[in-house]
Image (cartoon, rainbow, N blue to C red; front, side):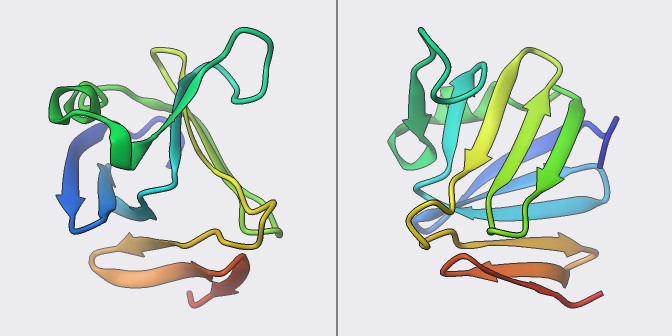
Length: 117
């Protein structure tokens, strides 16, 4: 996913789908968007479910500098404009799915990660 461009950000009910190159990442509404790492001094993180459409859409065109999936179920994506997309699994409630061509590659439900590809 590194170097790929965010081509679309779509609402899917209470979830958000990021289309990134040939991949698609479906996140629950608790995923965070921040300018810098959430938890760092002076950084405010907002839930995707609280963002206005134009705020979500502003991710389109950014490139992925780094994308990490942790064994705990957490996800961190760093974008070319300095923003971070983060799913925290610290409360065991991480829910997301990474697709390629609509086939689920990695699924995280309740913080449990299942690699399918």
